[in-house]
Image (cartoon, rainbow, N blue to C red):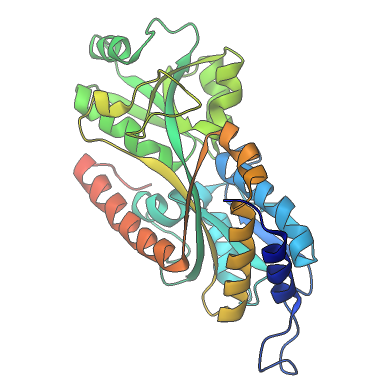
Length: 323
């Protein structure tokens, strides 16, 4: 969509204006820095997306937009911080299918309810996951890896830096009939470092976090979790070629604490959508592997509820024990 200066000016004016009909009761928003809470370390997909959006939003809001990384517990430390924050629009959750889907099924105790404790603002984007092995792994493609795993005479270990990366790997191992065990990490970069170091032979990871190592020749991309081909990995097949009908992508959404005034949520959503309408935004995000799937607050609410149900069903069907 082309960028229209007049439209941008209207949105900026709306952001700066006080609440209509209540100008004396409440101050304009924001009146101090806005914090984007990210449940994972720098260099992860959520962090990469948050930084691109925050950089563009800061001048529009007239306040700094600060990235607050709270890695650990499958992203739920950040979620808990936002759920407990004042409902004044200055604490924003950069959520994902991990924090608002997988975690509630894979952890015995989550310090928030992904539906009840958050106000959806905007669905942002999605990214495929990629199955990677070290560059010196004997398997050169997906059929070769399937043969290699089936021939294994010992338990196969695979890494996971996020609960959202667990489902494709677990389904692949079950489909192949492989005795396997997951090695979990606080954040994807830690898991990636150990994969490169040889601690385990394979893992699924969000493409944004693995792209640098793939391009550097440290890792080989074997398959993607999405049913659709990735423009960043031409020729790399979908896992659906091994497991018919399989399709899985990591999605991202923006949330505020429940109880945040609706005008604040609307303004934040409008400004963020303006950022995501700009070609220059996607000139940065697309090479990282992100794809556009911008949707309304209602779209994000429906997606969150569906993903919580999907993950609980998948964990039950796969026999995965919550941690």
